[in-house]
Image (cartoon, rainbow, N blue to C red; front, side, top):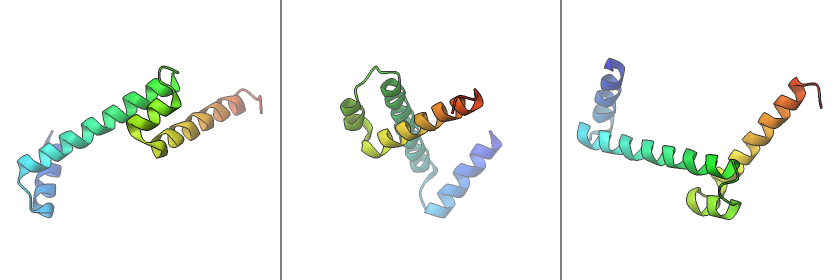
Length: 83
């Protein structure tokens, strides 16, 4: 907890913004990240189609998730000696 408070204080000083504004920005950023992860997870599980995912989070994020999923599949295949 003390590290979090230190981060907050440092960001407030460095950005010349009140701590409440820094906290609001952190909350917004965190929620955006959680939403993106939620949408991409649903897409990769087949619960959303590609177009729906792109509309929700953008093509760059969808393409990155696809590349990461493919890399994970290739790693597992390599680990199982199936390459």
